[in-house]
Length: 262
Image (cartoon, one colour):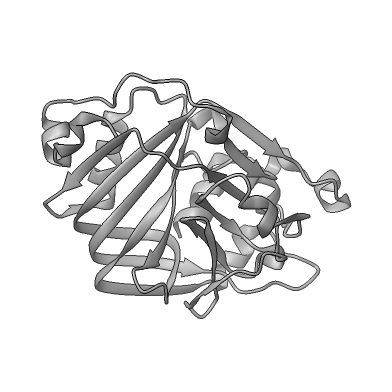
């Protein structure tokens, strides 16, 4: 851990304190992703990578399950299914995913949050701390959350609708004064269609009973941890649905932002 970890988030922002100079990571630190977000946007909800295989590549991450059967969060090498009714359950190793991203999380920057901060200023602050906006970052907050709004999708049936249609009937939840973890990735803007440009975050409560895809939040106090990677591995599904998908249409940045934030 970098020796500057005793800084608070506010102090780091006030002094424009950047993350430490990059040190080369070994291959275990690659950002491993199965399929493309542009495929999910177009309704490609079935993949052939199992949760067991996914966890060989990382102990931290997020994604979804085949048939869009709930959101996924990976924390401490355990994958949780965050179901349409807002509940969290440990995923079966044999379950399959059409889209997920994981990393071996070894943070090279850690800060303490000791004052409340809303989603927008918090993410702007993280951007200000980043040594480069052209790399991939993994971010984790653990602590007290003043308010959080999150969503979960319901299992879909064929013929699958595009994601923008699915999220119109998503289940949304709100909690106040909850302890838990928010984690995910910051993808560069040029990675549109690979992932979500900017921050893609999922939440799980400390008791591992509820969670979902994060829409909005206010953080109170806790620990912020940041890892970076310059190694990207894409595992593309060899399925007919993926081969037939119009991935260019699915990579529209406006549609992605709408699907992820509403």
